[in-house]
Length: 148
Image 1 (tube, helix red, strand yellow):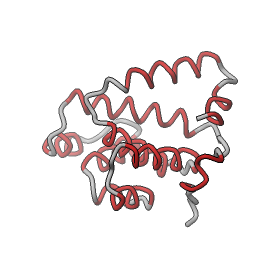
Image 2 (tube, rainbow, N blue to C red):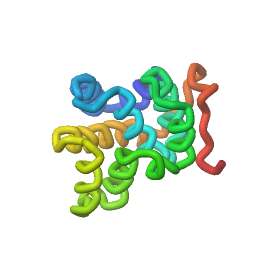
Image 3 (cartoon, rainbow, N blue to C red):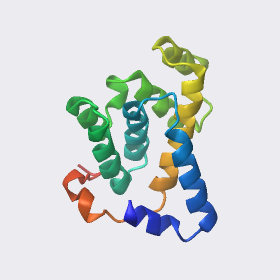
Image 4 (cartoon, one colour):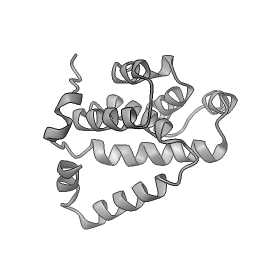
């Protein structure tokens, strides 16, 4: 994450908050793979090439199935994952999700704790998305083009 750290370093408050939230999310009731579903869903929606590449690498390490990763990268995550559908609802509504969206993610087996952690993960990923970070050489093999 060297290029991302460089982008966030313009604000000591921002990079500190990012790092603290990252540490907290490691203790999440969401699995690493579930956190990457959220990360990829947010990054694709925000059209952030750096973050899509990074979350692709993280999703692979977390054991997410290649076909799920591909669907998420193509913006079709809502078709393969209730978690991605809920994340999409958060993004579309600015966080004011409809009762039906909340009921659907809860019916899929997620707890209210996990729902709140999806929101925290989406906020964390959004911080990485808005920096315009150039792709690190280490992520070149995971490159993503929003126009494709």
